Length: 385
Ligand SMILES: [Zn+2]
Image (cartoon, rainbow, N blue to C red; front, side):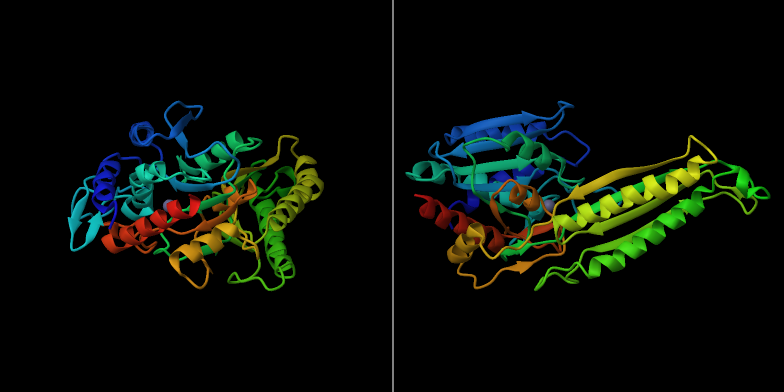
């Protein structure tokens, strides 16, 4: 298989960068930038505000609108408290499998893309191929959000994207979004014998949860016709309700941890809008009639856009044609794909390795999967030329 030794070697190099989300990814980005520049790519390294993280955006091929973007995240999940057979940051090859943190999620796809860069550069491409490697995907797609802001409004943009998350090379055209929030209630503490002299934060949190339960039912009636997700509507889950100290104390603080998985953007706006009005018009006036300092603050833990399946999707059609697949599916996990779709690209998720191994000890990728991915990239390079 063309490129397999190069890919394996590069993957070993990438796994050796311990790019756990809170830590810097600059060394790995510099390494990728070197390889891409050596292949003749036009490379941009876009640092974040902290100066410890960067996205990479690169182009091979002509400066014309359109083309296809190969996208992956550089960060990996932690290895602490996991029982690994060998050093997670030293690639181990065994039984046609390559082991190491990030091998399938998703340095394998990045290694394959970059190893094929010289091949893309050798072809007379009619449309460019782009490489987009981001930081902080595992903690809420922060890098991709920043990249999308940089790209928004540019004239030279890819119109298609392949997000190489591990799908065992299956073609994925949709996933729900995932929005996680912690809503903090600040009331006024007091003695349990005089409830009217305090603001019971737990009681207001309970009313908020009640509203979430009403919204959860209302969302069922908003399910798009013919929706393929399971279930086909946007869901809400109240994951934790925290607050209070003792039977006879009015609790001054409470917290509700909740999530929503939207099947369409309008549902997320509907829920957020309804809750905002409910707090402003009902809960807060009642709380502030006793304590002017009372507050309700919603902290965004993460907001990952869904990838909405659409009847027209050129990226999906091309990848189906190049792999000979006869269908596309859905996955229950989130990716950066929705952000790129929001930018106007047609997007498909397709990458080597299985999500079964992602985030687990002894994470691995099978060599046959790497081979299939390289085959797809090789056919893609022909298709673009
Ligand atoms: Zn991933």
